[in-house]
Length: 424
Image 1 (cartoon, rainbow, N blue to C red):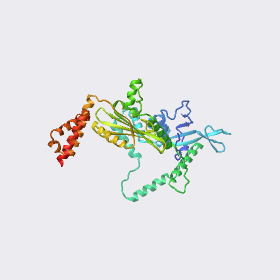
Image 2: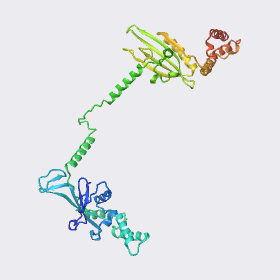
Image 3: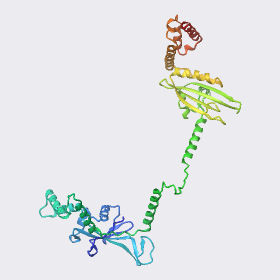
Image 4: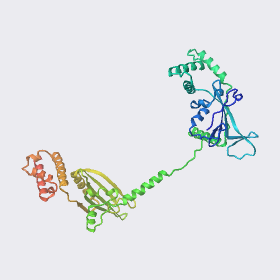
């Protein structure tokens, strides 16, 4: 710990009340054999000496004869910095050719309000008639009034100028001596100065700026591409794969993220398209999943192998996942998608999983809702003027799987014909 320098006037003529020896790893008091660590119990004591203040918790360490005008003189011998006979300074641990002496300073410790209260505490316990707290506070107030400079609250600027002149005349000869720095402190200060100069010139265009490339972004992109390629290469589990696995006893891989909801799969479609110019065949795989709340979502993959999302050549693969709504909305979307895919693709597989009772009821409710919306848009009067075929058509559409039978389709065709005639 570096202690502040600066000796009081005439301090050298007074014998020191305490001699403090500073070593690289510890310090000692006077000529005692006991050693103390810098971060030990006496850390506050050492910091008070560094501030040139009397330690409040060590007032009883000094005798009455050690005080001169309320102050105590302490001699600090710093063995971490030594001087040779020629006056040259050397750091501790450095080899020297001649006798050396430590760096010696005299410090004057001045009292503080904390030390004053500690003295009053000792007086209360050692006096013949112990003082109570009110009496101790009164004594402290009188001492502070007698020792502190007079407080002048006059706002006249001339008073302030006179006080500044008086303070300057009292302190102009108190020049603190700088402690000699060793090579480590010099290097640290030089490095701080270089960093400060670099910061001040950071926006100067005339300065040559060093470029230090960082490849963290490129590493992240390459890692992301590798993980995406691995995910696209994982085949999408379809209903056909699940049916084949039942016969062979081998379960399809459903551990990857793309197949995490394979248990909720209700429909799978597979199409292929051959490009003559590049002689490449691309496959479109579509899976529809129905969750526990009745809502459906779709996973669509386009790749050079069934169920994958990897591309080939200029044809890049892709993977899309998006919500569809209820079961009726999913059926309507698949119907439109098939119409679009059949324009340029060949159908390979279209499988539907048989529905349970709960799924069938959800499908019936969803189709009834979709049919009611379509009836409202096509005209309200057609369903009322008909001879019962309109109701039969609505019932067939609400029947879910029954609405797809040939009889139901014929009934809907007749109802549509009657509505068109009624509109005319």
